[in-house]
Length: 125
Picture 1 (cartoon, one colour):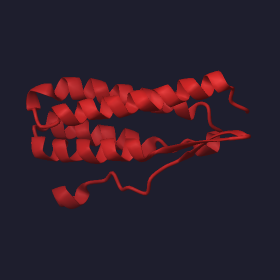
Picture 2 (cartoon, one colour; picture 1 turned 45 degrees about the horizontal axis):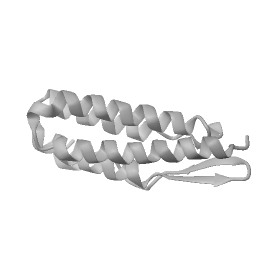
Picture 3 (tube, one colour; picture 1 turned 30 degrees about the horizontal axis):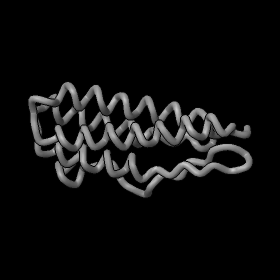
Picture 4 (cartoon, rainbow, N blue to C red; picture 1 turned 60 degrees about the vertical axis):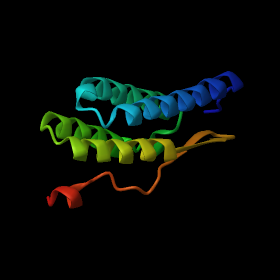
């Protein structure tokens, strides 16, 4: 499926929005009082990533690791493990901003970073 110039511009703006949202998360990550706002922002990031991914072929959808990362962040906040939640926010945001979106003649190709979002090594799990 070929992507129009208008769609390319919209997808580029979504990528810029995601970057802004990750900066917002990083600004709030150190403050436990912001955990609800962080959860909402991370959920918005996932939604934007899924919207972008919908323009690629189905073989390119590999957003499960980001959903897993979001769930880990949420769990650490719920368990009041704020240092781990902050660390995971940083990893999540860096990983999200490392996703590459390449426009090709056939459409959109998504390239995911080789980052492990499982922080079991920190929690000894």
